[in-house]
Length: 357
Ligand SMILES: [Fe+2]
Ligand SMILES: [Fe+2]
Image 1 (cartoon, rainbow, N blue to C red):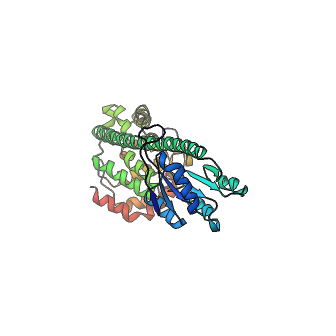
Image 2: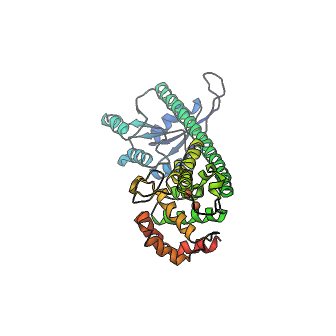
Image 3: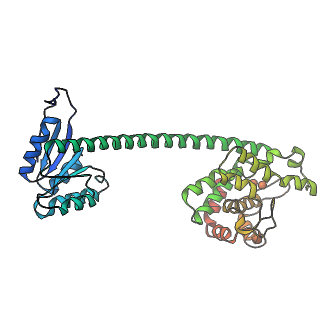
């Protein structure tokens, strides 16, 4: 490997120029010519005599441009060009291909293989420098674009993290509001979130969706903030009219979350967690796949937790009995796939039940 240092002053203009690094892979005679033509004009040339040396030099410190000769024995110039274009790290490195005298087919081949510029060995020094300048200008624009893109990506990712933090804080506040209006406790919210996440994972949903379900499941009853206190806290059985009013917590929750521009996963859960797979649920009596899957999951989790929790009007059901109940007498309410996942992850469900009391 030979390095040719350059003068930093352009003799033609007497001004200080920046130095551009060029890698030259050619036979010695062409290398000498290129050195004479370029070194005094602010170019620093690194001359290599094998493909392996060229690749090592490029990976160690990428030059601004590689100049590759087509006159090297064994098609070595084309081999290097192919190696550069098939490696992600070097695919954008600008290449000037110097065609061998009397080889007109080399020009097309070099372009087809991805050379940015092709010059013949007979090209004048001035023409060679002019073409290099164009390539360097493009390379600098491309570098600027890549840097701008990177900066933008960092800003977007910062903003996304900020939004997620705001969402988590908002969800926590809404959870608190739901807790204060309902007889449910924070532990109920946590258990429903954890059961739902276990089911979503078992059903093979992608991790991002599972996390959304875990985050938003606790908001299933947030619409109860819109229900009259006398109805919400009534100790006896609700009248038909009161029950109709109570059902509206699904619509209120949906409207509240939609107005807050919450993720659709959150508003779907709030709206449809009382729908039943056979169409006998509320508020819209939709059935089957028309019920969003996130709501079908939360429906099972919510009922299991209600069954296994003590209320002032009932004792807690033993978890094993609740499993039986969900799989037998209540089975027509639920998505069979969710029930299957529920049974398969029995041990994890019981573990959450035990841990989150
Ligand atoms: Fe509900
Ligand atoms: Fe609930």
